[in-house]
Amino acid sequence: MIEFKNVTKKYGENVGLIDASVHIKRGDFVFLVGPSGAGKTTFIRLILKEIEPDKGKIFLAGKDITRIGRREVPAIRQKVGMVFQDFRLLEKKTVYENVAFAMEVLHKRKREIRERVPYVLDLVDIKDKAKRYPAELSAGEQQRVGIARALVNKPRVLICDEPTGNLDPNTAMEIMELLEQINIRGTTVLMVTHAKDIVDKMNKRVVAIEHGRIVRDEEGSSYGYKKPSIQEPQLFIPRTTIEEDNRQTVYLDQSAHDFTPARHEDAVHEHYGVDDMVSAYLNGGEDVYE
Image (cartoon, rainbow, N blue to C red; front, side):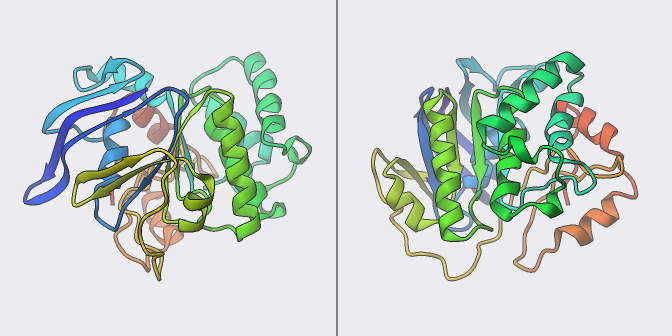
């Protein structure tokens, strides 16, 4: 499903990935782990075609995406669903509307939306909350909505960026059980995490990156690192394709522990509308970074 062949990516003198080779098969459940600055961010951005490798090849669903043109980027991005640590839901839209919007921006037919959204909400066990607003939901319920949104366009791969980071231990395990069920149904899951307890308990495949190199790739492996004492900054946070009041949360880089998303979003919202940003991203246009 995802294959890196001797992929190298550098940012001037800084290393992203060095000669990385890994094959994630269809239906795999893989934890991507490693210390801050290891290369996890680069790995995800390469899959999403937000950056290009300096050397090597990347395959997604059997297609060499290092050779595709700009016009083919939308099809690639629609094969990948994203789940985020902080949910990124539209506060002024209901649960149903949050999930439906992810289909609307791709101009899906209304009939298809009416059929697909309830099905996905039922899949993540939140169908009874369809008319609720995010503020009326628990953190676990909000993350279920985020997962439903990521699944609604039938992606082949689900990339989860610290999906349990804002959840208590019991709720975190409920979300992991849900992700495991989604994986059993056939969706490939790639999860970036620092949650040592979860990785150790799930007993899944672990790919570890250090200094841009893949240093470990083992089935049924443990986390293998000491539990971080503080939340590590996430250098890459691909924002959701939705934001309230027809304004788009931009794809940003977070580079400091004290980053406050709302503060930055207020600034970028002055210049970018949701439709413009969504269209630009899904149709292969330039992405906007902090």
